[in-house]
Image (cartoon, rainbow, N blue to C red; front, side):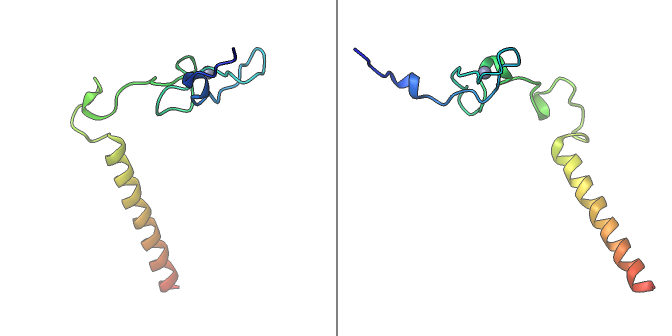
Length: 85
Ligand SMILES: [Zn+2]
């Protein structure tokens, strides 16, 4: 009997073993490309769920917004410099 069980067809971990240089082959965690041994579900929670959350000034969203604004500032200054010369 060579039954193929559904779990055998599940997506595999994309990590490579640093010892054997072979692919990991363990099943990947749902919603991740890697298995539980290779970093799936790791890291601290984002936003208010994070223990270091204070006032939202440093959330990924707020930082991205500030980056965008300063990029726009940079662009407009460059444009003004171009128009002045
Ligand atoms: Zn793995």
